Length: 104
Image 1 (cartoon, rainbow, N blue to C red):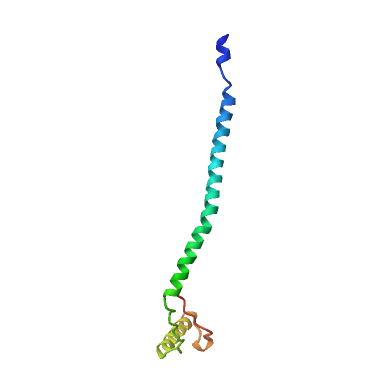
Image 2: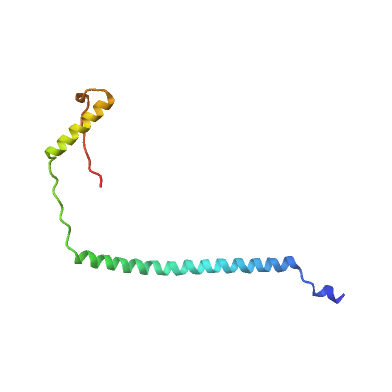
């Protein structure tokens, strides 16, 4: 009979361990959240200060003026239109160039 008194409820112990584990995980997540909330403004201020000093130290880049298309570009456009016209089987006069944009 005394042996029956020593046996504990295994389901109750399992639930205690489960609850303790979940509390520890949630506590660590909450701690990380608080640390990040404190550190993000600090690092933002440091990076803003670095950008400010970098902007004042370097000269402004020179802006290149837009130039008119050269004769070589005109020849390139004519070749492209001729190739498209040959592919489509139409006359090059049926095509009209609207605009060309450089993509970087």
